[in-house]
Image (spheres, rainbow, N blue to C red):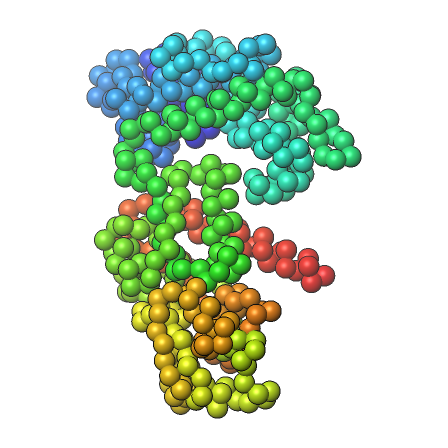
Length: 418
């Protein structure tokens, strides 16, 4: 949701029709109508009564439309104080029950100002970190892009907000005055989004992602999930994201019955009614405790015959890889210990009680002796979801976010090598 959509919608309701509001805003009636229709589509609910349009009378809001109208007036009134260089801009936004229709000429000025909802978040991030680079990383933006956005905000407001220093940036007196109002209006915006009774948010109050259990706080999966949470939060994507770590069989059941929207899994056999997107391939290692490793150059098939092998529970991709390796290589371990806890597996390996077959990044290299297995046993991590998921657009956003995180990680890896 951005300012133009809110401006078009509130003006249409205030003036009574797209034909009446469009000339006052300096846009075509079709542009205004299409924007409102897109807003309804994004919210998956009707904001305006179509029967009123058919009768040619004034636009009438639905219950959801009336709620959005009042909420939008609440936010737009505060944003207007910014571009009008009103000294009240540092104050809290008006109460929701005091919102009044806004003159269209003021909305037109706001529309032409170039101000966006995201600029407030950009300003607050720079204010909190005191560094453009740190704020850009938090927001998943490049430093030049964030600098340009802050410069554009300063130009719109007609006041400097930050002064560069050897240690970063320092907020000006104008920024100090603006901060409290920005924080409160951002909080108000989030509260509005929680309060609205749109069917979109009733059906998808959270995007529910299931994930296989990370093996440690440093594993590649843990880093991927942490970066996804950070990206979702700082881009302010809707609906909010929740992540549940769960075993693979329960993940599939949850995707089938709608408890989860998507899953991160190392499953080898993807159910036919699922779609999937490959994220990464991980090398597989036979791992021993550092102080209990086999003699140098001893083949893994010989070493395993005298060790207790700990394996993950049935149904997981890692268990399939383990079983396939033992079967293809004709290996019979000295013993098998099965557990659903990857943390317990790591502990048993590090203290020398067991050995295990684990993917790269799931163990601490300094604490174990790891023998790489052939590439044909590599493990693949995939994002999976039902083909008939009712909101494939949000699945697409999730895929794009994960792809962006992986691209950033790849670029960082290439830079470190260089």
